[in-house]
Length: 266
Picture 1: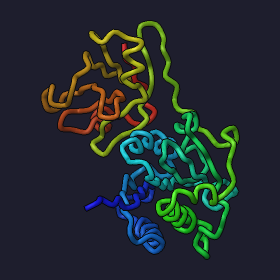
Picture 2: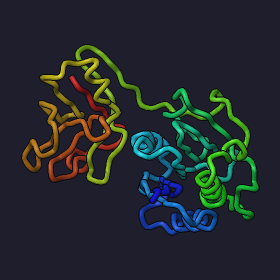
Picture 3: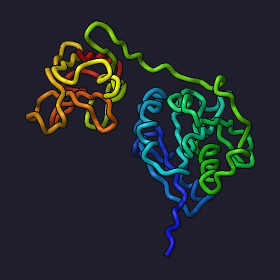
């Protein structure tokens, strides 16, 4: 018996875990494409935090198969003249507003971008405040059903015309490398923008010290269980970025730190 893979659509939003708006988007998708799978990546992006969503997207998209369609609704400019884009990257598709969400994909060699323009793909009635439901969701269903629709949804957009956001810089100075916290996960772990690759290209692997404002962590641990409950640890997490955690606790609360807090490795 041959295995038939159902079309796959993922949803990432800042709607909140209990939002009814998520169900409305799913209803539109299923109305257009009943035989598909929908994966909720997260609906807990901080409200209007385009930067947070843009940082998290690549670390999630990489685990999905070719043909997956990712709908991202973090859209504080909904209803304005901003464009809605579909980005094709690595045989996957990302749909969302042109506000910098896809900044980390635009420099990939296989990136193509189109503007959602053909209204025949949209719902007949389009709300000024919910383009995720009325434009993005039906286009996602069309693409998941037939990837050849990519050329039909709208005109190509040159990469020099898309909106990009600048991420916090990683600064190399003296005997250290400095970045900042860019995401706080549901456990209260503080995720920085310092990747393992960046750190190991600059600093020796041993005798590393982490400074988070007044807090000093004397070494990098391999995993959370390598220290006692209540200990503050630094480690490279599953996405290969340096993170600060409290074993069995919440680092954001315990250390009074969050997005924007400086972190230095030396």
